[in-house]
Image (cartoon, rainbow, N blue to C red; front, top):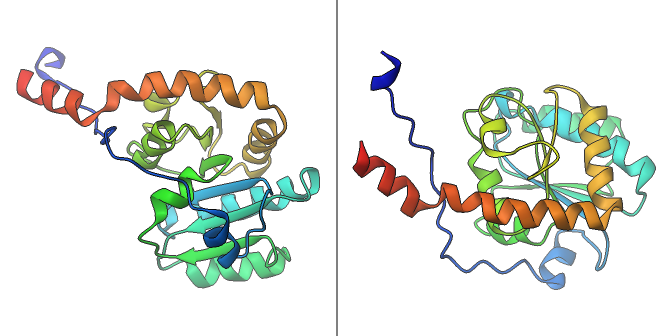
Length: 205
């Protein structure tokens, strides 16, 4: 029965101190100082749909020429993603970093955090972005809308729609007032997904 089902969302540690990667570290990855930066932290696996991210970045470049993007993660789709980056001639501005132990710092240094998933349970990396006060452009796959409310705590687009994802990235990069209002609301919203709240809800059950 439904009254016997209790949902306890995943939690993120809001007490950890994470500082965005400095200009030297970003430069070592091919990101010049002062440019708009889009970061996706996700394994290169089918349900994360990294090809939609790559194609979205291709569209963003035409509207925000200075943009740079980092795809942080590793997985079986690496060769396919590399081939698409080469096909779209994005090698100078979309960098595949592979696995990084400093993924949090790279995410915290970004101007927009994305998640291009075609399927998703929750998208815990979005909780990190909210905690780091980085505006979110993600798909509406799976449980993501339970975390991100479109137009309030982030911008959502349909799965497998690079153009729509790109449009939302561009909005956040070119409208500082929108980005600021979204991050302000997101930083409040993420408190509902703290580790402490997860523990309290679990104990209550």
